[in-house]
Length: 71
Image (cartoon, rainbow, N blue to C red; front, side):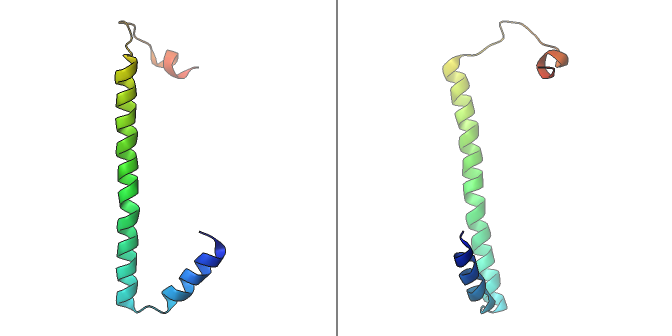
């Protein structure tokens, strides 16, 4: 959001009643929740589909914590 848009939003928000402010905030919070949940879900689905496509496996090899995190 640009500074001009933020200034306009702030000016308009200052003229709202308490009830109107609560209503606007609740709408904004709902709008913020939906994309985050969708993005998280899509990312997880993407990860699992990639794993399915690549058919990755360890061929029975196991690694120690040092092997995994030392590099």
